[in-house]
Length: 260
Image (cartoon, rainbow, N blue to C red; front, side):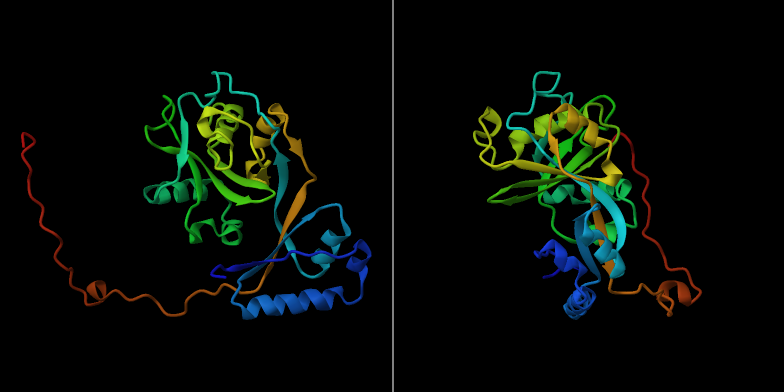
């Protein structure tokens, strides 16, 4: 509710994917999602399954790939004694960070993928890493992770600038700051597992997760079926101040004495 995308979650026997009625079922669900106002119909499925072929036959197309990594119980500390980010720190995202996070997101995520993820359309909920290293602009946001918590675990969706010098330390330092980590920053063991979702446009993070001895699942295809067709506006946007042929006066400029 309130988003532009509908997500397909299913539970059925493997032989049900070959049923004659499957295309009709998917078409019915597509029409249902369209009536709810969804622009996109999404599904995530392992690429080597019958479900993948069935969805492709139902006009779903691949827009990205992902792997789900499960962090170990106690990830190794960063090379600088637990602060592998070289002076950077994780902190909860604030409303004042919205513009910087969206700028980071738009620079990392392909424009083809952005409409499906919908990160720019909702309120941010997660953690940001503020850069303080010599290579980073003071106060600039170098990474953002979106968090989704449930009784069975915590989902981490990272968006990390490739200029990060130590991604392994960055992820290791992230863990104690995630809500649900017993003991908070002071230490302690987690009460729920942490899963990190690495999309194909951030695949370079997988090496850091391997170094942290995280367990990985099979590669999954991210599929979409578009329910709306984009169309250019046929009527030009009119600006009265420019249409009448007269330049409107601008704000006056005053010379300021530098000594003041």
